[in-house]
Picture (cartoon, rainbow, N blue to C red):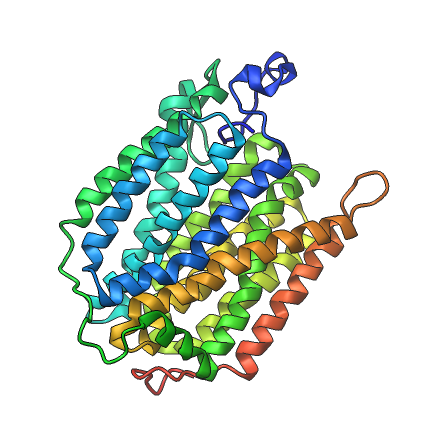
Length: 409
């Protein structure tokens, strides 16, 4: 396995064995295990960290400790070459890192006067940061002779001669950034635990939220949405390549989704105020249906299929971000951290694992004897699953949050 990344290389470089190009030569199964097992274990153990934040430790200090530890693990991983070392260090890092996604959400919610409007504005910076790293690191470290282009990231160049080996530096950079982030966490507003709460087990209390019909429906729909969401990241690149998009244009094409996410996130607050959670969540799930219907209709112009990447903004903002906000509304103050981690089990753990299995099953079912994938059947099946989640939200979901207003349907 290389350390990551993609891009065009010379024919001579491609003909070299991966290990000679600076990679680790892990098999596809080993790579999948590192990515899939680590993420799922991190999501499943996240409620334990939520319990710590709700009952024992100040959230900002706990996040700082986790960031320091995660940074150290990333730096150590950069110097490993064996599959076993990568697997177990990745699992350990996931156990430390994944809970911070929910903790950062709940910490932000705890200090916002109007989370419905303020949270999307804060959350959009996560997307901006994702784009910045994905664009800047290759520009600065993996390419030479940069020149402008009309396609994102608008500056491209020739890959460095030892580009595969250089990719490992992303781990070192991530480790350093994680330590800097830990220092920043120490400056965040004080967010103490609720030690005086009558129920000492915050995580168990958060799981009991499943008795609420709206939370149960959200978890069920979220499982399906998380599955088809992860299929998008697994199959979109080979799909775009199969319909004639050049390999060098695939990442710029997919980045349209992140750019659209910024725009939709900026509108999420007003949308929630005007339309309510049921309609916004339904819009998010329906965006998956529309995107996969477009993908499956391969007779459409390639430009239209590429343009449909913009639907990713509605997919993520209207479902994932809105779901985080809704759970904060629904949870009692003493279990907000744990409630976010319970939602994370589905969106970040079970969903991706089930999505990986579904992706494999669909790929096998729709691959012909010649190895060609019937993407019409593949994407239409994903659209059908998305439609089932959309229908469940329309027919069953009703806002039960304590701050639900008349507009929340």
